[in-house]
Image (cartoon, rainbow, N blue to C red):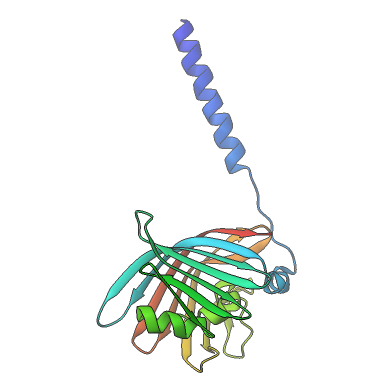
Length: 195
């Protein structure tokens, strides 16, 4: 008899915990898009896949932006660090294969040492989906769906945003694909944090 009460008690505790989690409602700011564009301190975790005619590579990512720096860390799925790219106003520093490399341009440094093309210099606007361009197509909530965009080196990118989530009052992308010539970069983001 006591055992049955204990099982029932545990079951109701479990249901109560589930109810608390599912009742959490996230609302967005009415002016979420300009607020998000102005937000210069953020961190996001996720996965990315580089796809080209010659190869396909994937990694976990942790991307942080602070007021004067941008930090991208890529790791394997078991947590081994592949590279760490730090960008400041003074230039870029890349840790790769146990060595440190420097350049004034982070995207150029990444391409030179890894062969991967990624517009890291402009990540703040395209990663958050706050690009302001005349080619921008938005959905009924004002969220970016697609944009044709030129990075700071003149490369033309098509960016498709296929999924969003609400985080801390903003709509933020969770799935996006960047295309440049025969290169595709698929990114899935699942943990946005803002300070």
